[in-house]
Length: 88
Image (cartoon, rainbow, N blue to C red; front, side, top):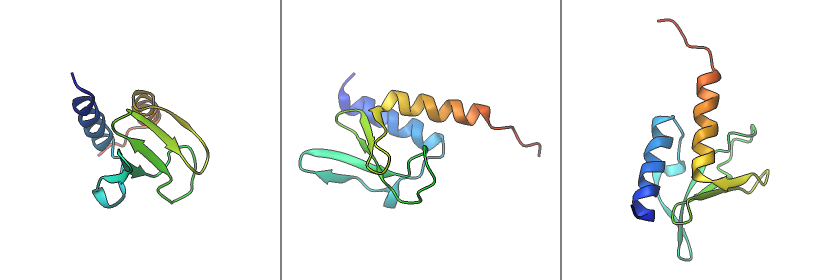
């Protein structure tokens, strides 16, 4: 698999988890495409977290949290699993 394919899969997983991307568009910082997200680690409503697609990594410019895309996805899945399910 290529890096691009891995990034597409990661973004798809994040969307399935209900992660909102700012403006739904891809941004560019030089040669490094990224998406803006709200960091799940704090209540700041800004889109301070950057998801760097080609590097398969992320960094929050508010709190400094960073790592690989896979760890972000795992953390979000775990937090969803911990939430009580709602009965219809």
